[in-house]
Image (cartoon, rainbow, N blue to C red):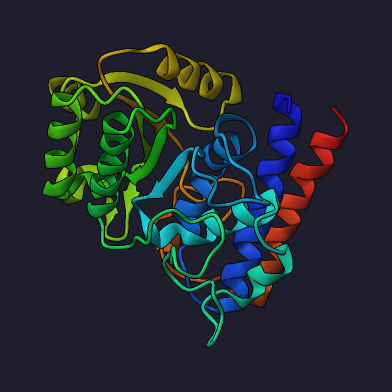
Amino acid sequence: MDNLELKKTANEIRKGIVTAVHSAKSGHPGGSLSAADIYTYLYFKEMNIDPKNPRKPDRDRFVLSKGHTAPGYYSTLANRGFFPVEDLTTLRHTGSYLQGHPNMNEIPGVDMSSGSLGQGISAAVGMALSAKLSNESYRVYTLLGDGELQEGQVWEAAMFAGHRQLDNLVVIVDNNGLQIDGNIADVCSPYPIDKKFEAFNFNVINISGHDFEQIESAFTQARQTKGKPTVIIAKTVKGKGVSYMENNAGWHGKAPNDDEYAIAMKDLEKVGEELCQK
């Protein structure tokens, strides 16, 4: 899949995010939209996965450490063929398998239940260590929010991963700069993020999380790096693609009403039309 197709796919994933959260009347659109391009690259180009065989032993593993951005994860899995896209409208509904946080026991393609911030990276580190101990070839990817870096467990996991030289682990930080209470630099600054991970023996890559050339280059470098884990710090825009949500902390965890939904879909339809003309 070339970059234009990836952009088109990411736009469809963003439509799914907005549709799911609107249908649920609750959820977390901002951080789902900011990570949509990362999700797209992982699931449509980078990872060794098979929607027809979600539990195949040699598959690459993914852990959504910032589990509240499940709408982005679900929309990606649906568009990749793990379950019907139509099911996205059941998000958070009673009886639906698509609840507010990912459940590995219910959802095809989900490798780890998550939601309590800071814990997902620890699970991913454990998976990466297991692969090393068992001489397995699969790689492990985990996506963190930048506000999540305020959790001490993140750094305990990072210390262990660096010490054990887990070069089959890739940590991605969705650095959109905003968390539920506002600007991360004002709430409890995690900066400089790159220097901190460097101190824990990580290969550090800074990129734009909306530029597929940079994304591809980063994951290629991660595969080539031996003897240390990689962290990709992706600078992104919270609410990316929806005009009134972009860089607005208020859209961290609320759903659009009917009028707002219509505007959001119009924004995304326009993006899709422009991409089709390229």
